[in-house]
Amino acid sequence: MSSDTQAPYRVTGTREHFQGALFSVVTDTVRMPDGTSAVRDYLRHMGAVCVVAIDDEERVVMLRQYRHPVREVLWEVPAGLLDVPGEDPSAAAARELAEEAGLTAARWELLITIYTTPGIADEKIRIFLARDLSPVGPEFAYERVFEEATMTLHRIPLDEVMSMMDRGEITNGVHAVGLLAAWRRLRAS
View 1 (cartoon, rainbow, N blue to C red):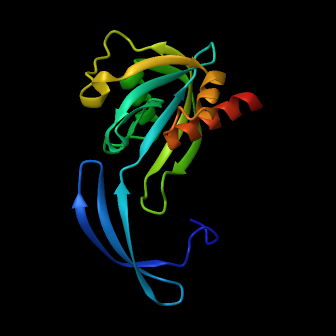
View 2 (cartoon, rainbow, N blue to C red):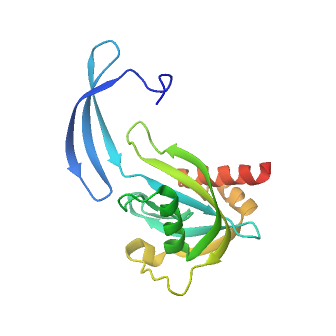
View 3 (cartoon, one colour):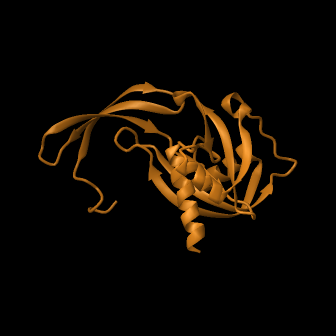
């Protein structure tokens, strides 16, 4: 990290309060540039990927998935955790596209990398654009469980997806950022 992006803050102690399957809750003691110390609580997250998959008819692969923290079924793109040790994010994106949408892509492009809520979590998400889609082969086997078992798959024209965001129908911020980045990338070319 270059000196213009790395703040002169130093962690002098860390205490973990909770370790769960998806994240942990920690408290850091941080030495400030003026020499004082401050306590900062945050979620430590394994990271994730999202895939904006767009077919040859410029339709976006969208899912309807239940999200328990908000108790709603949301419009989303295929996405998932970086929960396979050592897995490259682009491989994770391909895995999630296959698992959630039953698709593979011949062309991949990293659209954007974002921190979801840097004031309370270190979660970093890489959002990919997937093109030249085709169904997974018959040898691919994946069983959806829990919320994924009731997911529904849709292909919606990209312009209609943008209208859905304007109407407030797409409320997952990470997915909205990915869709906007994809729309801009495709319209700029």
